[in-house]
Amino acid sequence: MSMPVLTDHRWSPSDLALLPDDGNRYECIDGALLVTPAPNRVHQLLVVGLITRFSAYCGSSARLQALLSPADIRLEPGSVVQPDVFVYYRPAGGLAGDWATIERLAVAVEILSPGSHRQDRITKRALYQRTAVDEYWIVDPDARCVERWRAGDGQPDVITTSLRWSPEGMGAPLEIDLPILFADAYGERYPSR
Image 1 (cartoon, rainbow, N blue to C red):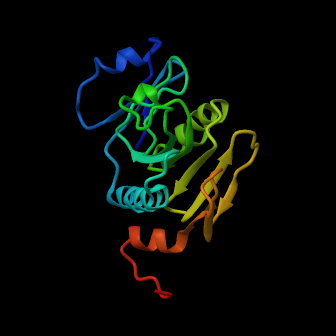
Image 2 (cartoon, rainbow, N blue to C red):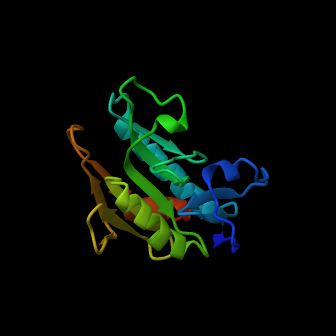
């Protein structure tokens, strides 16, 4: 479950360092503090499935690197987010040595949890779209679909079968078979294997 902490305090990234290391994920967007408790097993298996696919695809690319949170990503002043999975453009010098060197994301992925729908679909989507993240994926484990948003979109592409990602300069696209991704996360056998 994700829930905003209701207070008159305007939160800043520096405030996050003062919060306890209690297993929760702390983010702030536009002065609001977002608190997300530890995710469930299906959520984490979806993270593993996606990071495995992204990492294999990006491989030794000089342009793109796939990672997962915890990570303090600052796409604009006053905001810190921790996407479940993300692919960033490597800085000119190569690998990011510090989260602050990440300036742009190719993909940010959030996996819905009970209570995170509003933050993921509204608050984080608005941030990712206004900071020109190439694509923002909202993975819905219950509906077994991915909502894909791009910077100027007013509505997402809702994908239930094969998700195709074609970052510029990478050649062949990454194809993610969503029924297999979800079946693996739920521990189900997928008939076509």
